[in-house]
Length: 169
Image (cartoon, rainbow, N blue to C red; front, side, top):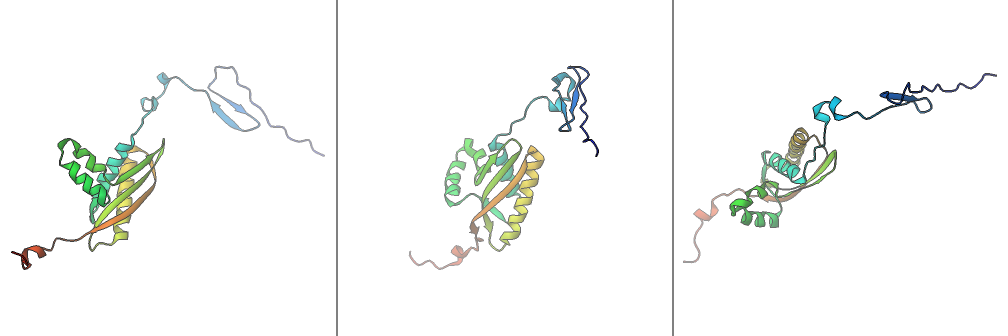
């Protein structure tokens, strides 16, 4: 009969060493170091506000051909009135965009109006790709989902009112 093998436990040479091994779990632990020895990029914390992610996502969605506008009917109406006030112009960029932002991830909801005649599924796929690429590139956050709600279809202005007969004079 053989004896059971006991795991070897390495003891730290002194309490000031940078690492030690725990033989039972096999985990290597490192003690925290002061900021002076660390690269500058890792010193401190960066927090990204939800409004920043909303603006990036809104601009990225509007870049896609086939998107006429963002926002539902009521939001577009209120937004159009707010756009007339000069100081509120920045608010229109994030109209129709809602986000949830965590420490490392974000989820995005978009309300869009598409142009008549385009493939809604193709436009939605392109919007997802563009929004995910822009948000991840600019913020470093992982985009876990982009939900798209198509609220309306923009019909082309065919000029029917110009050539139509006037019924009442």
